[in-house]
Length: 318
Image 1: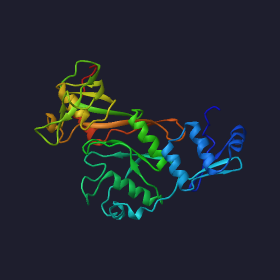
Image 2: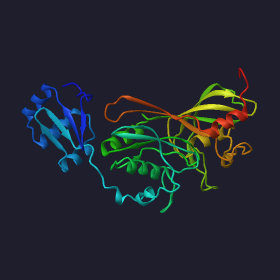
Image 3: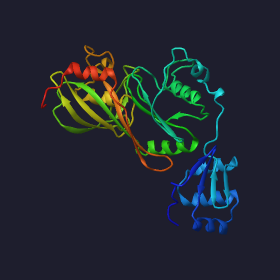
């Protein structure tokens, strides 16, 4: 049996209603159309995470109604027990989430520089997780939002969130398999000579500085792809694609080759023009967790990045 197409599935409240072509219905009837047999049949398709299907089955979330498969995909979650619930309700002076993309399965929010993705200690306010939860509450969504990846606090750019268990399973797996592409722009010190190159150097902890990382033979594998976008007399604008996602990877790798990020004092960058690292995530690409369609998200340069670009005044024809 060929791969079961998904484009005709529609959401009905908390359930996904999925009309099945007659050959599939006949196959199911022959195998038995109880929830147990439907689960076994779904497993045989190889299109769903086994643990997710088993969890769905254990809560009565798999049904067959005539020629329609019903999956309890969008179960609402009571958010009052969320550890950030009280903070998200406090609207005075609260940061609003800048939503770049949203549907029933996932959401992408633009994180500004200086904002952490999640609290590093109990009671910490002003995180992106808090802003995204506030967005859900203000739009009447009782959904279990969970970030799929993170950015350093001082890095701006898009962050992907799952809005249900199924999406989280699929996006977590895509992240592990390196199928989620992240694109960055950075202003670095000096004139980078090569137009395009790859830095393949393992990264580990710096024994002499608890908050730093360094290139180390005993570290974790780390691969960064770099392409020059513009050169000026005071620096170089580079576009970066991450193949791995180690802590401070871009900052460590560019410092390692002698081109620290402007503003990144921790890794040797000049703070003359900027007090924080000149690093912005301008793009994110992933396959939609349900349809499989490629989703490309663009995150415009923030004002501080554009101001830095003007101050550096890239040389013409450089």
